[in-house]
Image (cartoon, rainbow, N blue to C red; front, side):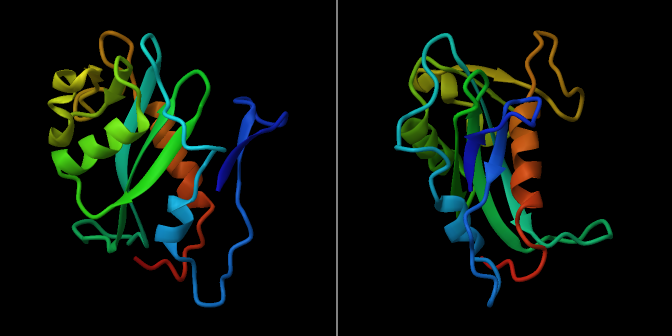
Length: 167
């Protein structure tokens, strides 16, 4: 999948999906590890805002309390340019997420996230960290939110077929 400019969307961008074989289903890990923009440049810089989040891809069930089997992914999106990254992760531990943040996001960037415990020490590593407590609000009192990255997950998942997803 690749983020490309498009005149028919209010954001000016649309996700373009490369042709993928569906004979034996989609390899979610492979699809999500493809680069979403040319090059492997870091996103963010001092004065820029990057929203980060983790999500699980997998087949959803229609009842509560069911653990969804699937693949955890972690990603970020720069608010102004909408440059982004997605990486598959085996776990959501602080060390795992921090390594990806350091790989993809420039120090000095303001990072906006939910209150997941894996993000608590971002300020110790050269980032400005703002949080949104989703159990209380979707926009914090300073006006920060994670709506772009949440929409990013919706768009990504909508383009994956519902059958044949595998880890």
